[in-house]
Image (tube, rainbow over all chains, first blue to last red; front, side, top):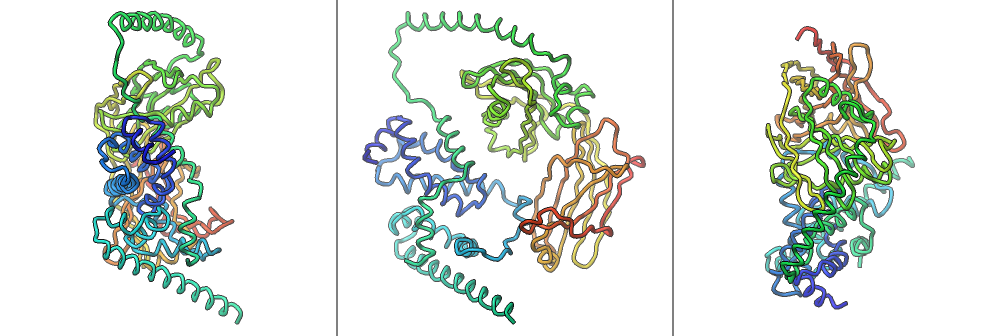
Length: 180
Length: 339
């Protein structure tokens, strides 16, 4: 079904149409929340609250084409609210399990490099690649001029490449050291 | 496109973790139903009201009969094998409250039998209509509640649900719901549960005294210091609080390892730890600061001595939990007969 029709139906209170919209965007919602919160349980809580808030407020959305950015903004707000509540409280696991383990696959290597990025850079990359938002949509979402998003994105990509190269170099020197 | 760019893009197709999928389903269940303009006439409305009164009066005796067939004598808390020793100890002090509130959630009958709140934990004994122990447990985990009209989420929660394996009667399971909130609960509050028809309010009052014994003993070396601060006795829970400070070098030396605290009683038996609260992470005076509270069940036969033994265990794959080192110099015994 046409997403615009679904949004219109959801705005009239049709929960089935709304649920379908959430199912379409749930991956984006999750990965955006994960870029802020890291812990899956917290992401689950933030998403649950966001879905309810979105349903209660969807009638206020004037332009259906902005649905995705509007929904992601709700998720981000919910995540930051949760972070504020958790301020100064560090779960035991996060303190006790520093990520010192060597990458065992390329996937882990990328995950580790992502974790080493600044919050802003990581969020930008997730919004662009995983959530599939355009530069224009990200600019609207984060309230930045498009050019600022472009330059930040450029720096984020550069940093990511640097981190992955560093990791590759580290791996190589470790291997040669072992061979000696 | 670089490999990492492809990796991020492909995540869009990944399956979500089960807990996230579950939270989406929960959110869908909580969505308010579509508002439909009421066109019911007064006569139809009266008929509906009459029918619900008839149905209501028909169900109550059936429910009463079901309850009578449940072989529970005295407190359900004491009868349940699944309630921890601390809950049983507190109930023996007479601080639980009878509730006997029944309602339905998704068509299943649920009875709140008793509550116990001593300031450290809230325990609720339930009887739940379900097809299996697992289903009963899920129903309680999914319970939507508010505390004094503030949603559960705002209080922060640590929840344990224990359901007795064997049904108490055909299709009915008994269990205990134990809640500890991050934000302290007030002395009196309403624990409100969302049912099929409305919110049901369970009134809860804090009962029982608690006492705090100051310890303030510090054990330290170059890289680590542990300040044993105090021990608090609640009717159901004994809370041991201490502060841990470590240098960056020490923190790094714990790579693939973890510093845990095991606790033994006067007979050298390991004391079960109900849960651990940890907060901090501040870097002050070149030390990483953490504060911990270890929650132990209060025993009917009070602890005479408690010995805390800091222990380094492995977190490496395949060796998780293996003891690497017992930090004897940091262990500490609290003689509670002297308090």
